[in-house]
Length: 394
Image (cartoon, rainbow, N blue to C red; front, top):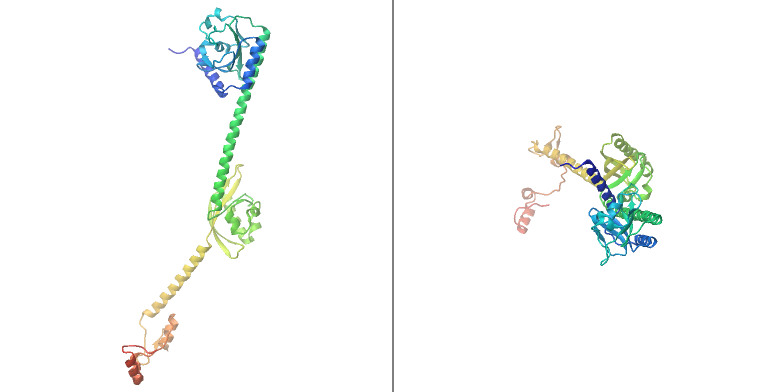
């Protein structure tokens, strides 16, 4: 069977009321002086032995403060509070013994009969949800005068104001703690960021659309021998030579106009002297205000450039050597008599001259053993006696 519409409406209303109660985060909390003061005032001004500040949960009535009993809670259906939630003003039961709704009501004081008199003012939120009651009780039946009703309504409003204040303070405390956590996280994040940026191999920078530096890292400051503070708010034209600044600005404008990353080589001199070659990666950023920013990372490639130049020089020398080898690798016409060599132009020259012209060879002179025997036989004989074996006289 389907629930009647009225039942569904009441169930939905009760669900909203319980959600409102839990927003105050007060259930099962420790006693608080502000609430105890209100229950003591209610018992004194109304002249009753019992006063309760009760909050009605799904299955129980839980007492935030109580005078005349040490009970903490009781089943919801066995209390007067549930009925008081649905009335305007003060809910009064002059004599519960004459009311069948409360035949099974509990006794709040052990050894004594359950209360017969009840008067309770609902604790109502600004949006109309009754969370519980501030009530006075007596074991004897009695009437509830206008002064008692006014007292309960006034103290009930004060109890609700204390709950609102408590909720606000708790929310502010949570917000403060959340802000502290966020600030701590932000500080840790900034520490990691600066540690990464200041100990990496790249110089890093952020500029606005006017070309003013918003951020530079320590490697950039060291490379150009200017402290970080000198760069902030200034442009490249203030910090480096005009020609290099113009080149850098053109690359920056390409990023702003196309919103695409630019990878380029930039030549910028540093104060230590000489041009430095920078491989720059430039890309678009957006600030929290939606404005465009330029982020850049540049790597000093000067040493690599020098190495590449050295490689190119060695390759050129090798190619020259190969050319010389090719020159010497063909048939070379040599005179059968004087041993002179004829070059490609038809001129005859000594072999030493030819080789020096077409290679990097250098010559020393000596006499081979055969020529030594022929030209200087006596000296050759003496050489054989002193050091037998083939040789060359330098």
